[in-house]
Image (cartoon, rainbow, N blue to C red):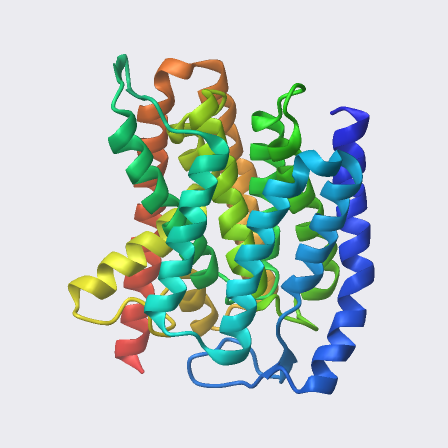
Length: 337
């Protein structure tokens, strides 16, 4: 890791940790507080919107270290944060929220460039229009799934640290470093926010934080695919834990006729909390899976690039199996009560 990368990580973390308590006091004064409820996993009134501290810290660090070269990336970040903040304070209609996400995803595509080709094992398909269109959809899904997965103390912040660090290091290009630095800033901001969001959380990041995290992860994955530095399969591996939990839950709800965008407690992490697991144990489990399962697969994919696709699909199958087990166990537990 270079000095510039290390400074980005450290400064984003320190600034986030310093700004968060100041923002917390302001949020409490304004009454922007999440109350406990049947569809929520917390038991104490807690201020929401703390992700604004992460966004502010990341923007300041990127502009301070990369100057005008970071303006476009910071603009995307602020646009994501603005939509999230409006949703936090006004509960935006789904069509407006998704419309904004698609506009920003298109801006990311313009910023990163088209996805010219995708490798399916040894077969390379050069269909830039198709892959670029699917990339926009994938970015919108990454934005929303990170929002859905922000429901347990520290979980989204820890994932931001994990995905930002790994993708940031892989995407980093000495000639055009801004996107890679954005990943490291995201990792630092996630770690800094964890100081206040770890169980028991004293502040929630809100949509302003989760939407920004999902968008930046999407920008990193899109930039990696467009430049050829990080394949879609490697990005899927890195993000697999959140992608599988959110996607499997969405498909299950859609199959049952439920509205996918309405609040619920059916994600695997929510089911575990419903079983009586403390938030700290859920955070520990998800962090452990990233370290002992996902990280070795990342290393294998980097060492054997031709095996990226089967490794990614195998990991998705394994994680989907774990998701299914959690669903079955919790369903049995609920039926016996």
